[in-house]
Length: 150
Image (cartoon, rainbow, N blue to C red; front, side, top):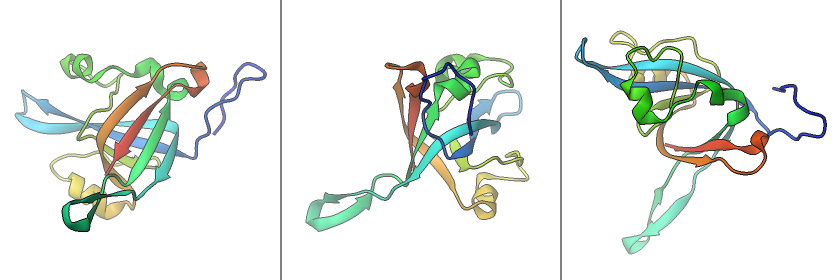
């Protein structure tokens, strides 16, 4: 997945598209709904880190780190609060805790007839965002969001 850029510029490495399902409450329908956005290039790294807690028990902190480069997705991104305030969210996306991420491009839409549970049954790599970090320093082509997902 390459993108044209200035000679000598080194882009962030990517290995897959990522489909994000942004969750929000629709006051007209009085239900939680999801908006699907496909990010064409991201770096998805499966992880299984553990940490010790009382009595030697080990808990997994997260299952994957997903790095989303600004250079592939910044134009339509909004922070969660401004995005949630939009009446028409269709031209924008965000990333926040509770959103679902799928490794690869997914055409399915989440709805009352195709739920997050159905999504998890149909696709292997479906995770929920638990932490999001913005790295907006350095070369533009290395700036990114890091999403910890479980």
